[in-house]
Image (cartoon, rainbow, N blue to C red; front, side, top):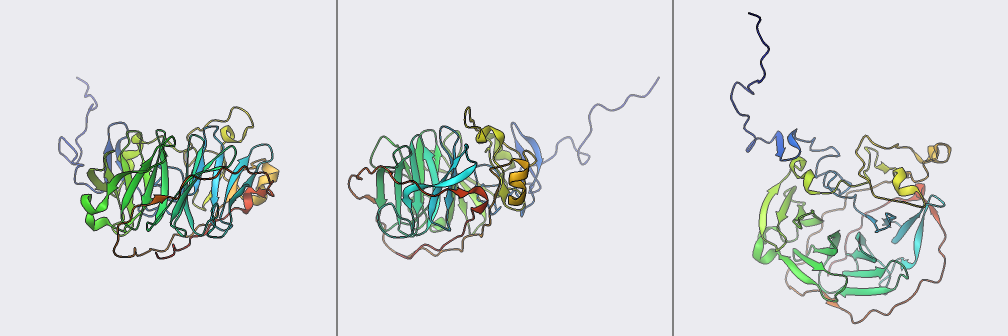
Length: 344
């Protein structure tokens, strides 16, 4: 009788492979068993592009409903929009530039788009401004003793992270006020002042990056703490794959689905997908949207002590339509810098 090959194998000589307390693997219902990511690689939540290891778009990038990419340029303190007809990023007229005046920025640290509303978190001016994408009218402005450092979009709502008091606010573009979702003082006092980045998954769960503990802290949609992790492999099926990723040299190339003037759509891109080229290759190869981005990690900031003043709206924003045409900037000239928010 001929011997048959085994149809099953034991792992470590045991019927089951323990993964619950194993730091070297992660398990997800859809992803199965994964090896843990390199803690210093692009699939780690520590990766410097702020994408939580590829769960979300890199920090400072946002797509509108027409799959048009917007960039936050922290060097010129402007927001730039990709023009597929020219293959360049052009600054939004009358939005941004250094200063404390309305529509100006001092230290913008995050952007998000919900419907036709563009949110800009400006930690330097301690405020969040919301612009209408078509007319660039100023729709909302909230200011106070807080330090808004990031904003995320999910399911028709914006989520604003206040690093100073460890709070998260939700905003519906059809309303004026902000709703407090997470208050660190009641849910997790030890994390006050430690959160620097926010993401929201398909189910409305909120993910906050704790810069001191180097871990993601997860809350449900009502602000209840669920868990903490430093490995995101088992979380990927909870997020829509981002269409843009940075490579190991911190460059990105827009996929063809985002560069066509017509029928643009956001399609997921893996690290091995697309063509990553330098600026010198851009014109020759036709990859007009390649961008070389030089980023530095933001220095840690210590929140001022005391006080718990909530942000306030500064009255109804006066609509103003952008009439001037800004000079176009090529995609290869975009770079970013990190700045320290001014103390309150």
